[in-house]
Amino acid sequence: MRKILSAYGQLEEHVLLMIKAEFFVQLIGAAFFLILNIFLAKEGFSDPEIANFISYRFLAVMILAFPLGFFIKGKVLKPFFMVGSLGVPTVAVLLVLAVNHQHHHYLPVLFILWGVVFTFFRVSSLPYLMRNTVSEKQSHAISLNYATHSFGTIASGIIIFALSKLPVFKMDEGTALIVISVVGYWGVRYLFKLKVDKVVPVTKGLQWKSYDWGLLLKAIVPTLIIAIGAGLTIPFINLFFFHNFQVDSSDFALIGGVASLLVAATALLVPNVKNKLGFKKGITLTQIIAVLALVALATTEFFTNHWWALPIAILCFWIRTPLMNMAAPMTSELTMNYVGEKNQEILSAVVAAIWSGSWYFSSQIFRFLTEAGFPYAYIFYITAALYAFGVFMYYLLILDYQKKTTKSHH
Image (cartoon, rainbow, N blue to C red; front, side, top):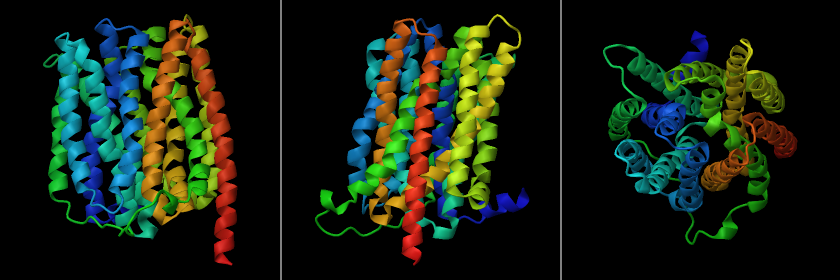
């Protein structure tokens, strides 16, 4: 384990500074993922209303990410990180205050703004790593970058649990979210120390035709399929536990924190898994097991009156989450190398737009299905089917990538 961790310690200082700043952005995002829906439910919002609010955030990213991908090409990325590091905590605090003070008419605008400031950091982070990390350290840099979300979820889960359980604090969800948002400002200090920010020069008159759209299309199709499925489940998993098993926000924060501990541990192992199994087995095997775990998790909804249903649901959640997340660094590295250097910024932007765009539509589909009285289980089964199809498409992409790399070596 020490050998694995030492490889991450050898990453360039500027890369570690960017990742530390991202941790604080992710800390806030994770806290809102864990308890925002439950907070809104307790404030009297229905599931369809919550889904509608969540969708505004993804709508903003969908609209902004693609043009931002064009805009960041050939530019230093530190200013974009600054906007994210200052904007995310500011909007987060305003959002909670708007709910607490019954200013509900501001919520759509605040959710859109929240999506915008998140996008500035999210779209820029992967291109920054690809520009500023030597190729032999890229796997570790990408894996550690992905692990920040998990570390953020672990930390926010512990903070939320402590704030709600310790007699000294006994804070409600809204106060806990404000405390974590204020802590999130700490990430800005790492960006002040960030001095290395290489720019890949752009040839004059950047054209639409300068991108290999055929390659980009092949790279993004599997992501699109998986993202639509994920959008039906991931943002609403806390509501599944809250409504079916009466799992409150502090307890879900703990369950989510443990899941993220597992995600972080597996994310750090990704370079080793990739080296031993390769992309083909590394991506497909982890995803197949994750899909089966999701099906089992969904099925527990029909057995909520049995004592064993909740432990099995939690166990399946703990299996599904790290294995599903384990593929993300591998698929990012695969697709970034598949499309080549000149297409990387636009791929990062398109992928961010796809995730958010599909989550916007998925949130609206989720709203429609819950209004129609569909059980969570049926919605999760749709996710599992989409995941399975997406994994098959990744398998085809890996075969094509292997064919390309074999040709280039001859």
